Image (tube, rainbow, N blue to C red; front, side, top):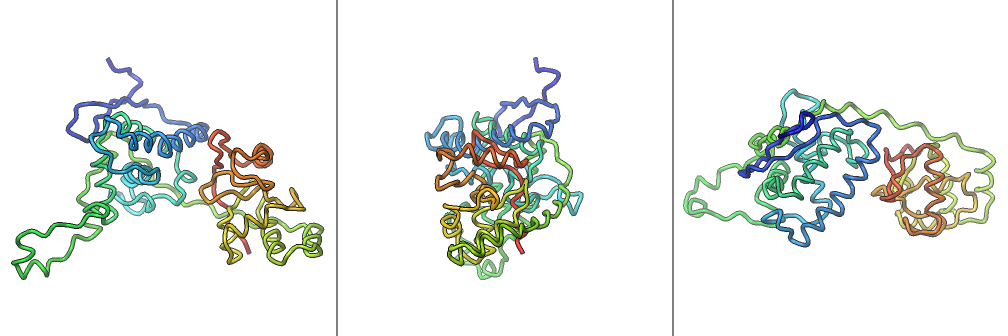
Length: 320
């Protein structure tokens, strides 16, 4: 007998297997745990099952972590109610929330994605169907790298050449609502993200030291730009390099030896995928200074998932 506190969901496939999910609404206080579980699921668990050709799925059409994220996010978030209409029109998830998704997903969206990912792992949902539907809303319904076969009419009927290909919008309209099929609730349209905070007030004493230092002009530009990142926020090597018309590697090299740390906050720079990045010349969670960078970030109020070596939140890019 099902628990009165669970929601029984039938998978959108011919299978009669069902998926029991807790019906309680997740709290935003659980966001760090949900984010960590979601990252582990799509980056590690599902790719490992695909590479080992686990029998839970008759066929694994995708193997890479970002492909699993695409399929699941399109099914859960891409099938949510559009902010501009009351209709539920399947779309790529990027038309629903900003990228990177993990920085903008609600607790409910994270839990729904985790539930769907676990259903895929257990074979309760057909991954092939989900992948085909994800590709279809992106105008790739024939499958990646596959060419459509021409039928008899294609070579004999002149009128067949005049037929217009199926548009992306028509493809979307023909797709079923995966969230509804699984019994997952449709979240309310996401509200617009608040504007980023303004650049931090520059400390004249520090900027003077930078200008008078024997550093190269480029390193000075990197450090001066870094002074703009407000306390409690973080940026990325990519964002800094875009501002400076440079490259992430050049920015990283410029920060390897920061003589003005922590006043010039190189600890507020992380990798583009929101992994912790480098600190004091060491990279990633295995770097001997990893703990110090985590301590500084957490002390300023930045969300850090230590087990995953990731930060959470919005990348600050308000350079001037």
